[in-house]
Length: 115
Image 1 (cartoon, rainbow, N blue to C red):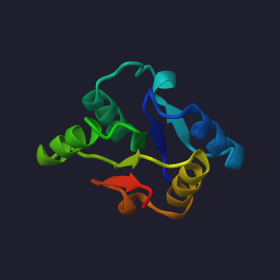
Image 2 (tube, helix red, strand yellow):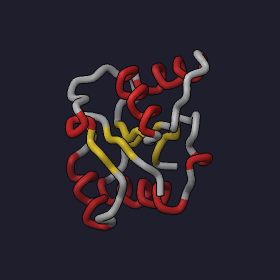
Image 3 (cartoon, rainbow, N blue to C red):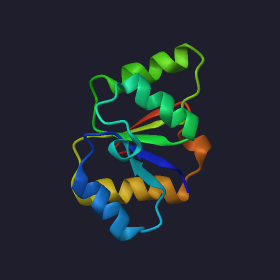
Image 4 (tube, rainbow, N blue to C red):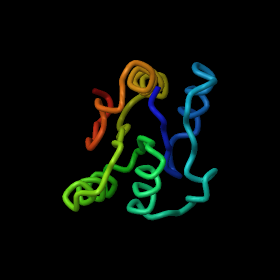
């Protein structure tokens, strides 16, 4: 199972739905680990240190910062960018990746959902 970190502005109903469907999902919210209002670079650094894939809706800055990390040769467990999806679809796709995938499926990648 992938370890996940949702950024501060990630859709609450999606998180709630993920836990309803998979109560033992290894997901923490940025706000719960002291990363409220953290810059993308700080969030990605923490995620890398904790080996957590980042869940975000931020299509503007997160991909840029993620690719900057890669260009600098820094580790990045991956980013799942959830954009223009229903809550139910987002839950399904995140669970599919988190439960059926492994780290190599997302390591050093920015994946846009829906797939």
